[in-house]
Picture 1 (cartoon, rainbow, N blue to C red):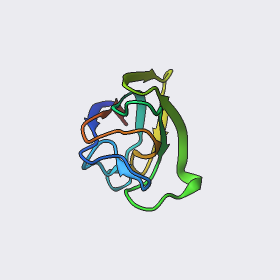
Picture 2: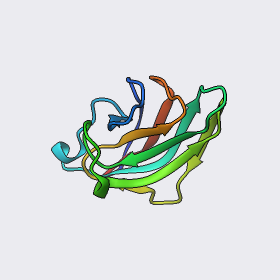
Picture 3: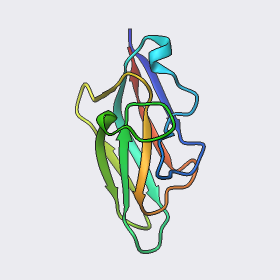
Picture 4: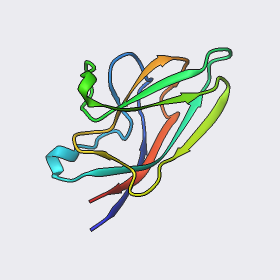
Amino acid sequence: MRIPLSGYNDAVLTTTVVEIISGEDFDGEGVVFWLRSLMIYNSHASIDAIVDLYDQDEGAVVAANQRGTIIAPYGTTTVVDFPAPGIAFRTNIGAVLGAGTVAAYECLAWGYKE
């Protein structure tokens, strides 16, 4: 059964993994989250944001858990849609900021759990 899910980061993105959909625990629930779309607002005035996606809980980066990279031009909102079924996240959906500025509540994800 598919359960729609959306949410946002409640903390500034940094160089450690931060949850994008705060409070989720996919492995604890025994579900897979399929990411269908992601919106990022990069508020930096002159540097493009580099946002890496990770399938892991918050904390230190584990390179093997990386699922992709999104570039968000400075001063803009970037929306990326992923073709069906989407990108699978089995533990948690997290992000790491390599450059730019993505404040709390400025990275939103939506998709479904099954």
